[in-house]
Image (cartoon, rainbow, N blue to C red; front, side):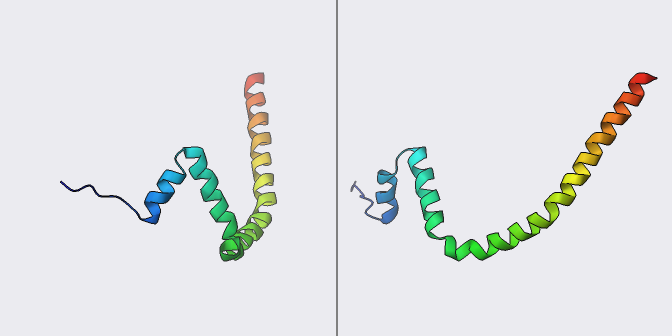
Amino acid sequence: MPIHHDHSLGGFLGELFSTTAEKATAAVSVGMIAVPLWLQYVESVSQVAALLAPILGCIYLSLQIGFKLWDRSRDDE
């Protein structure tokens, strides 16, 4: 039975980055190098999030205040 040696790039990278931390660090590094490719999409999502965050924050705060007041009114009865 012949022995197959994997000389592909994946085999090399598999040996180079053996631990999970090394693989995660390598993935983050590749992502940072590729920022120009996906930056425009992040900017558009960021703009939408910047518009929605204050509105959602007000709704969430109103709900928390309403639930607290409702809970207190039930305790008083």
